Figure 1 (tube, one colour):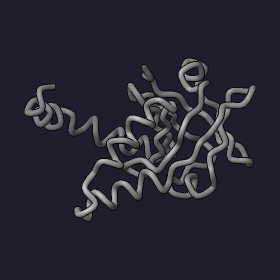
Figure 2 (tube, helix red, strand yellow; figure 1 turned 90 degrees about the vertical axis):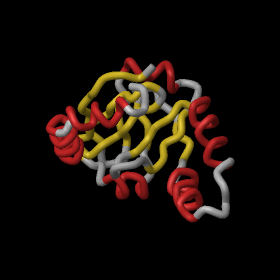
Figure 3 (cartoon, one colour; figure 1 turned 135 degrees about the horizontal axis):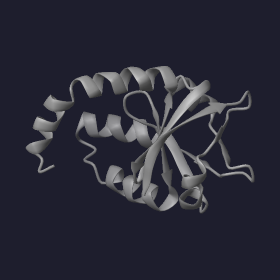
Length: 143
């Protein structure tokens, strides 16, 4: 399980240090792709396979299903953790999420999100401000 929030820096070669607590779960390979809210999603290989199966089963006749599948699947790239615990993020994904320099790596149970630090702080402040309303809406989902 991935939990926690960490600040790391992406170097000039697009390498991002993965928090040491996350490395073992990603050591068998990982996939990084476009995420929602202009961040990147990083999945362990086994979790990515589950997600990819769900995406592949979406109906081709629905435009939103096709668009979401394209966002996630076409943007995906296999990545490996090097001996220093880093992954290389492809340039097109760094550009999509505006990640360069200071970056937030957040654990979200079965995936890791990679954010531009300023975008994360803005998103986090808005979510905290609206937390009561968000919680009430989630009560309808059984949370």
